[in-house]
Every structure is written in C-alpha cells, then in structure tokens.
Length: 247
Image 1 (spheres, helix red, strand yellow):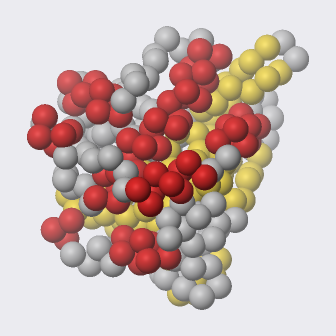
Image 2 (tube, rainbow, N blue to C red):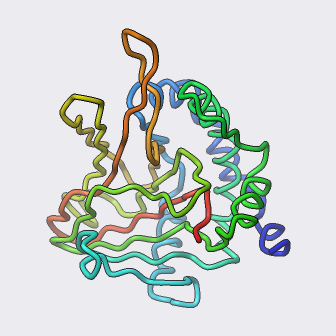
C-alpha cells in the first residue's frame, strides 16, 4: 500500500496554476451558503477529452456498475484502479489541501470530533488502516434517457465530507439535459433543490452527506443528496473525485 500512496503525485504545473487562479474565498462562501460551489475551468478541453477517452479500456478500472441493475438510475460508471491516471492522482491531493479547512470547520461547527490530517496521503492511510483500500475516483457515462438518482457516496466509516465532480463533455454540443442536481433536507421542512449549471471543464464541489446551517438557535445539520437529471440527447461524461477510499 505504501507504493500506491507514493504514486499519488503532485499536480501538474498547469493544474496547480488553475487551482491557484480560483477564488477560494468565494468558493468557501458558496459552500457555506449552498452546500456547493462551482470551480470554473478546472480542466482544459483537451484534458476533458483525455479523461473521457479512458472509458472503453477496462485496464484503467477496478469495476463497472450498470446503474439500472441496482436501481441507481440509468447509465453506467467505472471506478478507477490504482495507480490512478496522472491527472486524477494530482488533482485528488491538491483539491483535498484546498478543502481540508472547510471540512474541519464544518465538523467542529456540527459537534463532530473527527478532524482531517494535513495531507491526503495521511488521510488515505487512515482509510486503509480501517480496511477502506479500494480507490473511489470514478468515470461516469450517460446516453440519451439516462439519469442518476439522488444519492450519497459514503463507502465506509471514514468519509471526507466534500467531493468534486468535473464535467468532461460540452453541453449543447455533446449532450442536452443532464444537469447536476443537489437536494437539501432541513429538519421539518420540504427538500430544497439546487440545479448547478456547468460548462465543459467546470467542477462542482459539494457536501457528501451533511453540512452545518445557521439557525435562530445556533447551527444544525442538514442532509444533502446529489444526482443528474435525464439526458435528453447525446452522451455525457463526468469524472468524480472522492477523497475517501472504499471497503
């Protein structure tokens, strides 16, 4: 396992520059207010095409899931195997470093004792020691009529409370429909939907499970789920970057 963790590389200069160009104060504010934030232009079009082109080659993946067989929706996805593709291997620790502060502050606000270590390698070591050793970054593929039901990506005891989805296809050219959807369930209230428009290469950061919300008597937890609306035409590819590994 040490060799796997060592292989998780630093982000490329290009990715590091794109991450540095993001207004993280604004992203943090959006996460606190809505439970999600858009990171515009995280990947270039050629990087999007490179990742999407990996889908047909099973040697890149540890498993394939056909959603309809499990009641997850329609479409399919594949979990990457270790070692991850260089682009994902660089993005995962770099994004973790940007989001760790929000994750720790949210847990403190919600009265959760768990804190996340300074590096993603250290967090993965925690996951692996608990038996969560399977990589969770995934590549999703949708065709016309496909959709993804509302869900949460938990996978085990150790959960990093934020994750990232990156749209690899170009809306209006490669596909129509297929909007990213987030719903929030507050206590004794109806669910609140949030539709997040994305362009090719944009990423959305969102809460995996729950987040704190300020109420009249202090903070309370709200539960979130995410999914994708029906693809009306064409094909849509997305990469999901989840920071905890699975049992």
